[in-house]
Image (cartoon, rainbow, N blue to C red; front, side, top):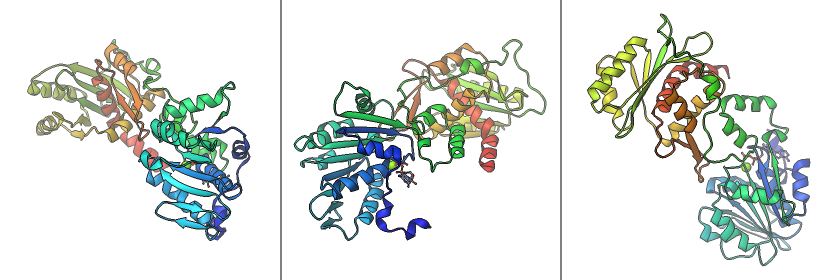
Length: 412
Ligand SMILES: Nc1ncnc2c1ncn2[C@@H]1O[C@H](COP(=O)(O)OP(=O)(O)OP(=O)(O)O)[C@@H](O)[C@H]1O
Ligand SMILES: [Mg+2]
């Protein structure tokens, strides 16, 4: 409510102390890596405003996409309302009396960024901007006027933004300076909020998005596997009457194995992985019989099976056999949460595993990279290695943890 009654120019905040020390620093190239909601955009807008209005500089505000550029444009228009010499809406260009201008640009078409000399370029969410856009288009635009740059972003793996950050850390490299702050440095963010995010998110996501850490590509996805692998293999666990059990099924394709995992959700310490089966068998009828046998032995409440490719007809056939099968369609969007749910559970020993060498090996080699354009994590087994037990376990855990997740949301 208070926001509405403020004069428009107040939409651009005056800077906090930490933001101010960055703004006042003499370095020509400033790289600021911060957690989500730290105040990156707010700081950039204030610096753009001061450079254009007080020092009559020509400033570009560059964002990776239209949607990220739109809000800053609205704020800048509101802040300079009726004070501009000229405004061109189509070009998102404001010219100020006595010189100085601000243009808001998107980086998705780098060729539209060529052809002018600039005093200051501010790149918001720079880690999501293409390396070539920065190196071949924006950086050269600063050359003739000895222009300055402010690169602000939450990290996105170790891409060019990380390299720029590293440059800023090296006291022997002149003109560059870099800073890194976690979200918690913004005092309007309540600590409880961060605690909640930490509880919900996998450690790596929290480290990148909230602690502003530059996470290395290709690292290990699952941590704490050894500590969680405490379910006895000898003697193997047996079904316990009244316990709820859940099965995950990953159907093999071509060279892959079919893998089955069963979790007993009601063990006293934590849910246990109580059965793991893995076989290469070209005959689908025999495969389904093997699935049905294990499901019946453990009296599973739900079977969650991957529906892609050969999954769908097999799921139909298993349902016809009277089995409680649900389909899981793996897509780039659904795979992330599926894997991250398991990552979190293993890290926190919310699920205990059998020290099965194949499973432990597959969990240990499972890897990821970060998709540059979206910042999303892509999970996969390295070339030549398998992930069928990982997927079967992730599906079983998805089924077993669903009531808990729903409970979690209700409590929140
Ligand atoms: N100097 C400041 N004074 C008052 N409020 C501020 C200041 N800087 C940031 N904020 C507030 O903090 C919140 C986050 O700011 P902002 O959107 O600039 O952060 P961000 O780091 O760009 O976030 P995101 O990661 O979502 O892009 C907003 O509510 C903003 O109004
Ligand atoms: Mg922002």
